[in-house]
Length: 176
Image (cartoon, rainbow, N blue to C red; front, side, top):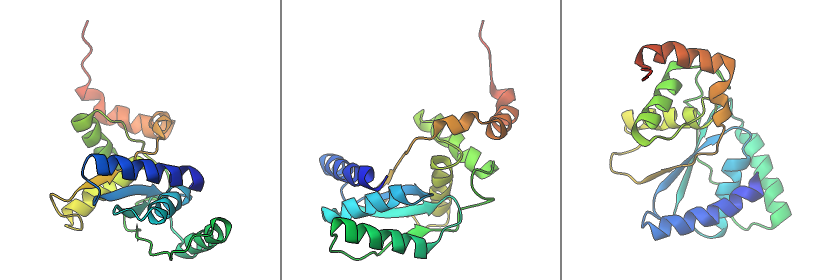
């Protein structure tokens, strides 16, 4: 994951420059840490102006991230230090546990942008971002980039699917 997301960081930086949002903050879900650390190292290596904030989707261990970073530095010869920003206050019930606030975030994104988020990673990250906006940790008008890392099949796991179906059943209209 780390190497793939280092490449992703270069592409993301180029696209942000093209769109003139190269001082935006990128938000990404943090689970096993490979995505976050790959983006972090990639953005640092190219001296990008993009800022990176991880939103933990499961219990987070900073010492584990530091050890992973140390290993990456040794392996790839990075000459920068780790100044990580991980938000840990939005984990909720735990890893992949169905939660109303996450489903509401998924509904919001789907209704406004037509983008489906998963209930384990990107939905939980977006729920965290929405909370951060309400808490004024993210100021209105600030440029943000939300990293969608996939996971859509999680929408169809039984525990999540049943909650979605129950909440949405009165809003479904079948046209004949």
